[in-house]
Length: 214
Image 1: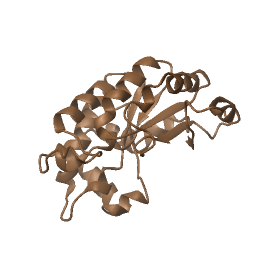
Image 2: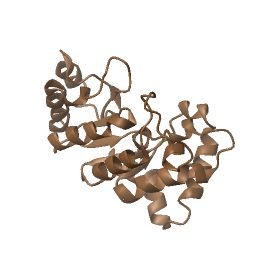
Image 3: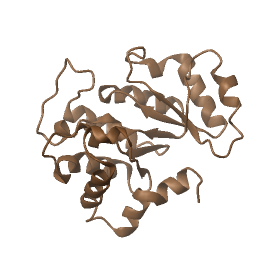
Image 4: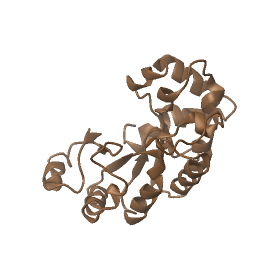
């Protein structure tokens, strides 16, 4: 994945430099920054450039505030020929999802449990969208356990199904909450009751297939 800014002048000329590079699979733009306000990904020029990514066989990573996942659904529906990857479980706050914390309207990275669940389910219903199970470890409180993360992970797995989920380490950002080793151990514990074939797909197989690494 490479960085890029769909909708900006010169984006297509920039991305065309890489369209024949086998090692480059798609584009990622962080949209939870101050200069990318709500609805940024629905601007006409942005949508056209993301559609173009699909035309040249590249994907686009959705990395935005959890309260704006509804806008992601709108983008996805306008780009049926582009594959999308939802980064970091939609940037969910696992404490809100597991019921230990409440939504804080003053925090732009907060969300309600119901809104996040509904938007993730909507994204999971779109066959050209994949969920990267990652990132949430960075938001865990002291004294966390696998149970802290399980409701978030399980909702993503159930919404997207066994063939459209991929593991992500999110190192070194994961260290804000715990080590990469601790994150992997927690995820393995959460999915331990699922079929071994599904676990293998999540941890490696799906990424190998979706990114053409086989």
